[in-house]
Length: 297
Image (cartoon, rainbow, N blue to C red; front, top):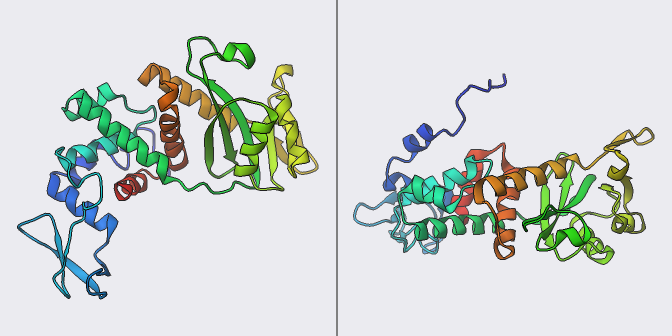
């Protein structure tokens, strides 16, 4: 049975503090996510259990007694910020739809703005690194957009000062986004060949540069937005062509930037874009998203 809109979320703030009441609970969770209750000991080569040591932040192998430090080699190793603060920051990032500003992190975590900015930047960095770039196939929507700057975005001269972004959405699958230098045919062809498998069905708008698709082994249908055409139904293949999913992501991203961050410089645009793409690809698995980020650190 589907949950009603008023039902409690799967990972509420109350649930967060119940699961992670202190740094000790956070440390144990890092150990379980990274290593699990049983694994092969690097020192003795035996698949063994590990028990918590009382005098240090470490676990000991039941077979040989070798010490394992779950935070070693991670961002948590030498941090002076409590683990619970890190965990709550990650929680905010995976449960929000519109992102978290540095000022909001500062207020929520009770830390300095410098610390809040660093924590947020590190979380976005892991979101950028996390998703493997798998080739998309089947039916793929492709669209580009202009983000940032002071003027309304449109192709050509109206895009001055803006960052050009390109999105690929596999129907029923993943979203891939990239920053591109221009919308020339050479650029779009290079990015499409890198992200979409040959033989895929591709839906785009009528931008002239997308004319490359059919010649590159794709079945290509262009929806002519300039003529108020928003979708085309192909009765022969029984496929509906539009770019609604990618355009919806661009709308959400732009509104979130304006509402949460006000503006994003070109220097940091990729990191914020990757953050929103990461959430879009995992929005139905908040707990798993949280654990993936903990493991990534």
